[in-house]
Image (cartoon, rainbow over all chains, first blue to last red):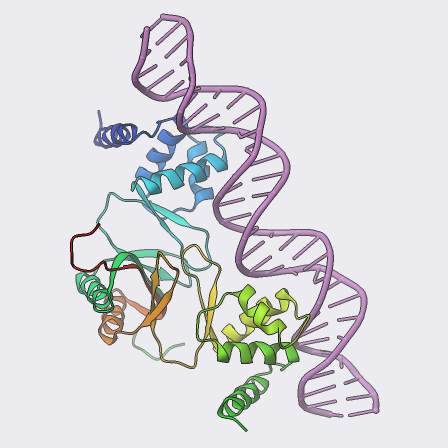
Length: 147
Length: 147
DNA sequence: AAGCCAGATGCGAGTCATTTGCATCTGAGA
DNA sequence: TCTCAGATGCAAATGACTCGCATCTGGCTT
């Protein structure tokens, strides 16, 4: 049994424990999400899932994504000007830089920023439920005069 | 002539200079936006503009908001789970805290976070075009044990 | 292994925010 | 005042989801 299968099984067991029925469609989506190195949107996940479960409907994809988000298995990101994008929660917390020219998404993390945010909220009498930090960026041209 | 009229006139002149025709509808929206202390959405701006120019259409509101955004006169914020909200660009740059329980929007600014963002982007070979920092928060209960 | 049924699925229709096509109107420079 | 590129109103279209409902199916129960 591969590492992948191992992690998958642990996850599906946990979900079943939480009362989430693991159907073929959901298993397919979980696998597609686990394999995704990028931040795909719902239609793209649908496309990928169809290769595993032909005929899976887009509404099932949306319903499952919502369910998995509620279970804390995935995160939903609403970047500017695109449909929501999803990623699994396996990795550490991080924020995103979006290249406005290519749409490419780069992850980054900064502990100091996290701490500052918490301090600000605290000073104003709030506690953070969650936050969103997105840097819309463009590749620096080399320091030479631009052409 | 009031201060308000004065600022309004300077702004409309600048817009005309930039090739933006100042129609009754646009003047109404500019005034409504200038008066707005909150972060209203398009339909609310439409409602307010109708009191100045009855019959103004929602599509004109949307078209004008897009134009004003491109001219840098207003900012469009896409907070989670709500239609886009708008605010004029007169004030200093700031970020937003959104109370997840009431929907209330609180502004804040922090120079250190701004600088850290720029440093991060720079270190990764990018320059920031713009950014988005939103803290989704809830009012702290007093330090006593929660009930 | 078979039965059961709450919950999941597929399909199509609905929703919500926003955009667009088009015929008509109107700022504002000439 | 004249002109007409650009703006408006209306209705229809779009895009991203969401929902209603009849049918199907995981996965406890026996």
